[in-house]
Image (tube, rainbow, N blue to C red; front, top):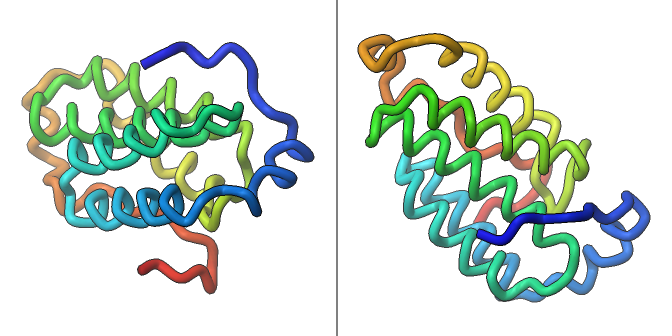
Length: 149
């Protein structure tokens, strides 16, 4: 993934939001469904397709989601607590620019859940992950009233 060098202001984000394509919105929903099915790598891949097609600065929003999904993939599949910490930290840092919500995603709640899980993983070894099975990980966070399908 390319490094995001700047983030859009809130005004720029809101101005761009109506022009986000139907395909990008569908990709966002598809990734969310995969995330909720605990298929974190597949969610990462779905969002990466959207991210690759987005030329505007709001691509950092998708990159944040991608990194959060990759962090939970490290939690559940590769079982790398350090990878969990690194990716959840990076994802949260990107999503903070989009709080409190963006494209129907409850960014504040997403940040809160990812930060909580990141803190749990801090300084732990791989055996500790067994205490938190896949089913205990957070679901995708939409704002109230947002259509999820």
